[in-house]
Amino acid sequence: MAESKDLLQVLWSGADVLRGKMDANEYKTYLLGLVFYKYLSDSYLAKVYDLLNDCAPNDLEEAQNEYETVMNSDDAKDLVLELKNSLHYTLDPQMTYVSMLRDVKNNAFNREKLQSAFNRIQESDELFNGLFADVDLYSNRLGTGDQKQSATIAEVIKVLDGADLIHAKGDVLGNAYEYLIGQFASETGKKAGEFYTPHGPAQILCRIALTGQEEKKGLQVYDPCMGSGSLMLSARNYSKEPDYIKYYGQELMPSTYNLARMNMFLHGVLPENQHLRNGDTLDADWPTDEETEFDAVTMNPPYSANWSAAEGFLQDERFMDYGGKLAPKSKADYAFLLHGFYHLKQTGTMAIVLPHGVLFRGAAEGTIREILLKNGSIYAVIGLPANMFYNTSIPTCIIVLKKHREGRDVLFIDASNLYEKEKKQNVMKDEHIDKVLALYNDRKTVDKLTYLASFEDIKANDFNLNIPRYVDTSEDEEEIDIVSLTEKMQETNEALKAGNKSIVSMMGELTFAKQEMKEAVENMIKVLGEV
Image (tube, rainbow, N blue to C red; front, side, top):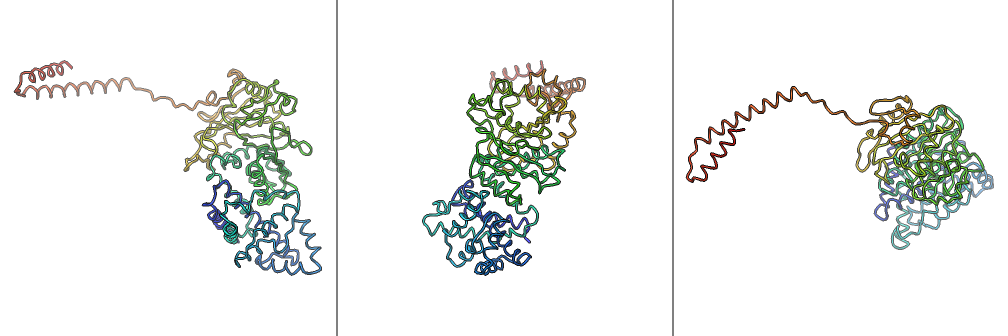
C-alpha cells in the first residue's frame, strides 16, 4: 500500500526532473498533468481487470497483459463499451501509462503516442475536454531538440512509476495532489494567488460556511473564483456526507480551471457532482440554468481587481438593489461579494476573503456596505494576520454573510496575532483555526479579541467596519508609583552628591604646572560643589 509520505516523495521527485528547465508556474502544469494521466490510466487498467476477474489486480503489468489479450478477442467491443459507460473515457492498450513506461525502459518512447492518449481522453467526454491543453509535449522548455524534449518527459514517466495511485487509501491521493499544489504555490510566489488559498484561511472559510450544515446530505457548495478547487474541496473534511456534496465552481484562467478538474477527480468526486466552468464570474452571471442558489459559498477573489463597472450592470439582478451604485472600476471587491451573495440560499452561509479597504472605504462601496448592514446581511468580520497569502503581504479579512436572519448585530474578531512565522509566510496552525472558530461560534465580546456590535454601534460609526473601532487591542500602560519613584530620585541625588564630594576632594590634592590649568580645575570644583 502506498503511504502518504512515500507518495509525496515520489511525486515531488518528478518536479526535480523539471525544476532546472522552467519556473514553478510552468513545470507544475507538466507534473500535475502527467500525474493525472497516470491516475486515469492506472484506474482504467484496474477497472479492466476487475470487470474480467471480479477482483483487483496484484500489479498493473498483469492488468495490462489481460487487456491486450482481451482486445484481440470477440469480447473487446462489449468491454470497451462498459468502460466508457463507467469511467467516461477509453484508452487503447498502447495508450496506457504501463505501455508508455515499457517504451521508456526500452529507449523507444514516442511523444506522439502520449499525445494520442491525451487526445483520446479529451475526446471521450465533455468532462475531459481540453484537460491536457497546457501540457505541451513539444515545448522548447523541455530541452533543445526532439531527443532532449522526449528524454525529459520519459524521465518524469520513469520517476512517477514509483507512485502507487490505485491503492492509496481514502483521501491520500487527493491530499498528495493538494500538497503538490501548495508546494508550487510556495515556489511560484505572487502568481500563486491565481490558484491557491493557504490552508489556514481556507479551513476557516470552509468551516464557517458549513457550520450548522455538517449533517446535510447533498450539500451544494459554490466558489465563483475557484482556482485549483482546493477551497471547495475542503468541505469534504467537515461534512458528515462528503460523497454527496455537489461542487459548483467557476475559474477565469484555463490552465487553473483544468487543474481544478483534475483535483476533483483525484479526490474521488463523481462526475455527476462536478459542475465546473471556465469563464469570467463578473462579466456574465453563472450558473443561471440549473441550481442557482447554494448552501455554502466560499470565495477568495483577486483583491481590488479591475472590472468594467458598465452601467448595464445596474440592471443585473446581482447588483441592482444597492442604491444604484456599482463597485468602482479599479476595485471589484464588492462586485465579487455581491455575486456570491446573490447565489446564496436563504438558509446558507457565505464567507469571503477581501482586503481591509472594503470595511471602511466610502463613495459607492460605502453605500453598498450600508445597505448590506441595514439588511442584516453581514454576520461577522474577522481580521486575519498579515503576510498570509502568496500574492500579497497586506492584512486581509473574512466577511461572513447570511440572508434574512433575525437581528443586525455584527461580530468582530481580531485574529491578526493568531499565527506562526514560517520562512516567507505567516501560517495559521490548527490551534489558531480552532480558536477563531470557537470565538465565532460563541458570538460574545471577549476583551482584546472580539466585540459583538449592535446595529446602533455600527450606525454610530457611520457604517464603518474597521476592526480597531470595535476591538481594542491596545495594552494599558503600566501605572507609575509616584511615591516609589520619588524615593528612588532622592536616593540617586544623595549618591550624586556623595560622588561629587569625593571628586572635589581628590581634585583639591592636585598640583599644576600651568596657571590656566589650575584655574580650569578650580572652576570645575566650584561647579561640582554647587550640584
